[in-house]
Structure formats: structure tokens, C-alpha cells
Length: 455
Image 1 (cartoon, rainbow, N blue to C red):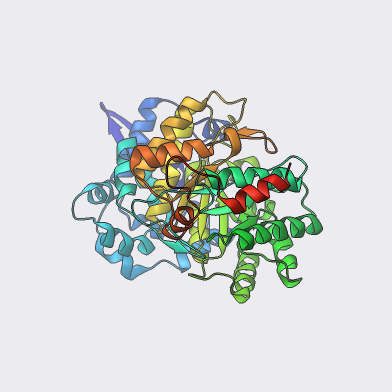
Image 2: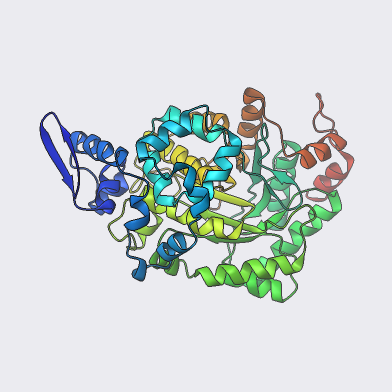
């Protein structure tokens, strides 16, 4: 029993899973799952109990049994005891204090990350204010490389997302060129295909690779198809740069995605064998989101923020180039309004960075959520201040294929200018060479020629 007392009333929590769930700031998904605190007072009591819990407790009790779940086994079996040693004497509250202190600089945070389990990171997030989540994450830089260098301090990159409802090549190319002209695409040029057949995906990969080579763009491309499709395409000689997969924080939720840890390892090996990266070998791209395990009835009574952090435990095994929390995409059943989406986006970024991942965020919402673009502007500025590696660049902030709202090419420019952020260095040099950093901007001849061909 884990307990805390408020105003003479004792609140008891049966186990780690329960206290973690009840300590989580209010969100609709936990209410839907029946795991949320019954009142604000019970939530504060759970947060107090969690703050006093020794970090070592997380190594002796799991939220999902070891024998039941391969994500739990991964977390426990690969725990780095040496990295954990400097903070092993702390409680969850003590870890928060240390993270906020001058004693935890970038080097110390990088060193301790492998020693923290996802549940430790999730627990600290639950007792942090928004200001804490931003301040701590801002200390951490996680750098990854493929054809350019992402995550350096003072940089903000973007995935150029040129989705089209019929995968029309001209429509996709028009969106890509628009994004390039506005400085987007250094994280990746990535398409969610409307049709997921291998032939369609191969055509899109060839389209992207041809564009990259013709314009000599120092970036990477990705068609966000299932990992098994990507494996088949790689074996067939398709120009696959990054391997994409949605992942979650339980074995059963990953099974619902049709994926296993072994399958991801096979894909990572196949991508490495292609040797398409010029600056680095980080070739995996993962997307996550709070509520994914609950949506497939694979949450095991855990809260969605803890399970999201556990997904990062899976991701860090594969040294990815990009990890993207698609924070508001899953809908109001899981994050009801702008307040919940903002908090979740900052939690996800904080936990991912603390665990050593190159975190980005799709700052987004669906049209039936109690949120609007003002909420997304707030989250954009907060994440930019916190040092997020990348955001989305979507034409007009409105994805016409997936039917949700995100951030636009212009939002990226505004955030860079407001916060003093710059593109990835290699991409920035390419933009300069194309005359796209100067004002007024002249349309580069190679892009003008391509645009003319689309008329």
C-alpha cells in the first residue's frame, strides 16, 4: 500500500499502477478507462505519495507484470544500473528537484538518462508544473543524424507533410515545393499514403527520391507505411531512407499495430544495410500518442501518460532519427480540450528527451475536440521554448487527407523568428545556396522550372 495524508484524511493506493494513474493531471482518456482520481483532492494525495516514493521502488514493482509484457521485460532487462547510480538515492520528488537545479546540466542529464526507466520519467512529469516541464526539457539536447544533423541547440526543424487524398503526384509535389520555399522539410519529407499498397508506396518513394536528387536537398524522405511493407520494399530495392512505425507502451497495443520488438529490430538492420545515410545511421522514425493503448483495449489498467512514456522505452532501443508525439490526433475521448492537449504535448516531450530521444511533436487537434488554433499557438511557443527537435509543416495547417489540424509552414517560420531558432545546419546552407534565406526572396530557377511543369 502506498499512502499519503491530507488534512488528517489518509488516502491509500493499492500499488504503483494505481498511484501513477491517480496522480496524473485530469484527462478524458483516464476517466474513460476508469483509472482517474475521483476528485482533485485524491489526485493531490496521489501526487504527494508519488513524490515521496523512492526511485528504487520502480525497479522492484512494475505497472504491468514482467512475465506478461515484453515492453516491461525490455525496460527491466536493459536498465543501466551504472547510469542510475548518481540518482538512485532519490525519491521522485527529489529527482524533480535535482532536474530543476543547477547541478543537472546537459552533460549530467545525458549521462543519467539511460538509468531512468520510462515509469520514473512519467512519475516526475506527473508532479511537474508546465513551467517545470519546459525548463527541464530546455536543458536537454538530443542530436540525431541521417543526411543532416537534427536536434542541435538553437535549431528547430520540421517534417514537411505533403499528404494528398488521392496520392496525386502533382498535388504532392506542389505541396513539397511550397514547403521548401518556406524553409520546411529538414527533419524529413514524409507522406502518409492514402493507399497503402506496396506498389503505391514504391511510387511515392521514387517520387520523393527523384525530387531530393534533382534539387540536391540534404534531407531524408519517408512514406509512412507499415514496417512489414517497408521491409518488403527494401528487399525489392526501393529507395527507403527512414523506416516508419507507430508504437505503443504495451506488448498487446503493439500487437494491435501488427508489430513486435523483433520485427522492429529486423527493419532497423535492413535499413542499416542500405547505407543511405551520409552523416549518420539513425534510420528509424516512430510515432506515438497518449491513448493508443486504451483505444485497442490494451492498457492493463494503466494511465495513458505512463504508457506513452513506456513507448519511449521501446523507441530508445532503436536509436531513431525522429520520435513524434502526434499529441491531439487521437481525439477528445483521450485528450478532451486544448488544456489537456497542451499539457500532454509538454509531458511527452519532457519524458522523451529525459529518456534520450530526439523528440518532435505534431501540434494538432481533431475538429471535434474542444480546441482551436490558439491552443496550438500556445503549445508551439511552449515546445519551441522547451527545445523541441521538430514540428510539422502542413499546407495551411490543414491536412486534407487525414482531416485534422496541425501547424503550417508559416507557423514554423514564425516560431523560428520569434524564438531565434534556425533550420538544421546542412539544410540551412542549402536554403542559403538557393537564395531562400534572403529577403526579398527570388524564386530559385530549379524550383521555378519544376513548378512550371506542374501547371
